[in-house]
Length: 188
Figure 1: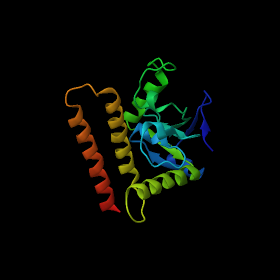
Figure 2: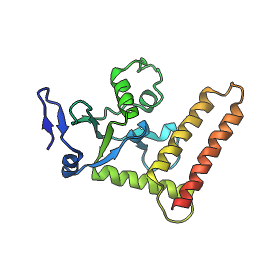
Figure 3: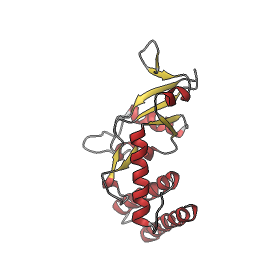
Figure 4: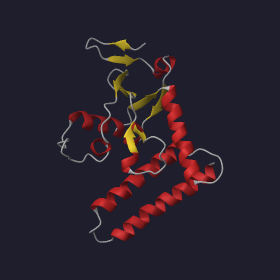
């Protein structure tokens, strides 16, 4: 059970306390770790990505060493990852900026439930079956790299089509994606 401070903020003294509650801590390296594929899809595109529902995370405070528990507010991908203005987002949100800063500072840890771990494993297995031959499961870190480059490629195709070197940049990004799939097949 998390502790509460004088402001009613929940926190853990250590990650072991979170594990005892049944959470599976995963250190966050990318904002994309807050997202997953929709339904049974296996195509990595912006339209197929959605926030993981009911996802908790902790932010490690450097001042007191506590792990403050927060519920992810299910920001759309364009807001948190691309930080792009839209009709519903002004392009100015302190909470998003703070979360981006915490991830960049390497102080965020996701608290996956058993169901969220199983769903992520299912996504990794589904991606493997859709892109590789034989049985296997895509590495989580390679998945995040492929997703990152795939989203950047898709975004670049939407917003950079009139730029000089457009085809070259697209080809380079696609080559990186292909190299990562090759690396994944070798790790197997």
